Length: 112
Length: 114
Image (tube, rainbow over all chains, first blue to last red; front, side, top):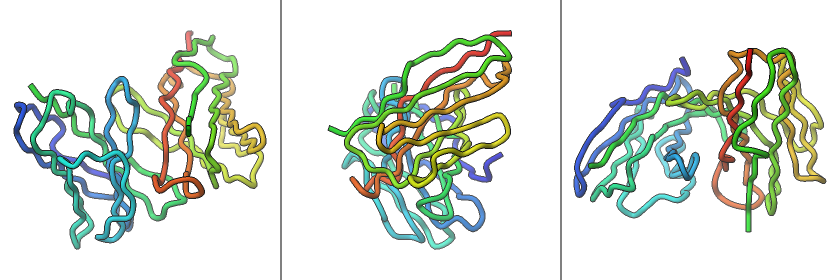
């Protein structure tokens, strides 16, 4: 158990809909990272927050947004969903950039 | 363009042998490199971190080397066991060549056959 929790575990929705994925980092970790993993693309970095502020941005679509709250939990919002958004979404946390990242169990999103 | 390549998609070895996985990169200057293990449907699990000024790092049956001249890292599992079967990901810090905290390779799927 990494200490990172993600909800929900599975999400099935339709194209055009909006969903919210939630992540709680390990106790004491200020950084939260979001990744998307699909079979053909591998693990793709989406966005990082550090202590409530956006720190780095990767290949995140404009339809996606995220935030980190004062209690350090984070939410990833995905809107106008397309079939191609179906993937595993992971959240990770770390104490600092140059340290190990601890990954949650992931949310499997299926868009029908 | 920037690339991370892990030697092969899949590697099969006999139990008890040493597994060697390769991670090559181009157009990055990583300050450190990490290796993770991922089981199907689960999140990656951190294994080892090696910094640019370190040649080698060990942890139990695991050994990582980092050659910044060759732009290559080797990941060894000695006395491999069926329980070592998983996908292994290398990840580069890209602070010197980008804003993404870590860039992951696509992984090598290791199967240890009893």
